[in-house]
Length: 175
Image (cartoon, rainbow, N blue to C red; front, top):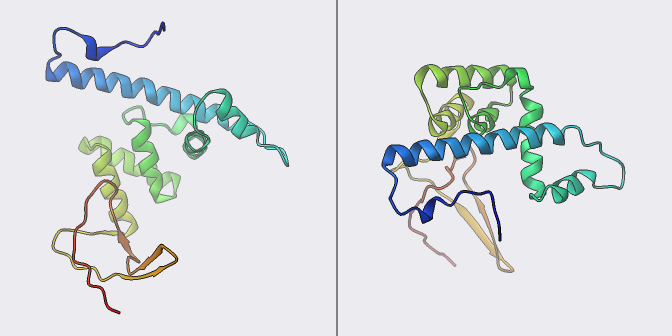
């Protein structure tokens, strides 16, 4: 199989940390360009009653429909002239949490001034929206109901659970 994709893992000499980071940043930059292009193209796909032309578009370019829809949503939210070159696509997507273009752009500006990455942008967006993250040592009472193999949980209203973070606790079962 012939491919134009470079295979970094097969290098004989390992990369230094700075080279690994710089190569990773370059790869993210290339991915971001593709996301913006796909999103912008997605805004051009016309919806017709009874036809899934957008799904066909995603199939034709060989990506998941859900990914193409995300790229289109972000592209619609940020017209090309508002996109901040100091931040990657993911930073723009996360700043969308504010649901207001001007507020999102102000957050991206604040992030640029403070040299924040995506994690800090997410944290600041949550703070601006008044969402409280679960912190170590905080007790949260959950109520759950199990029925036909499905678990229904309540008690997290107003609490923002961070993706990729493990939460541990004690589960007490009463009859």
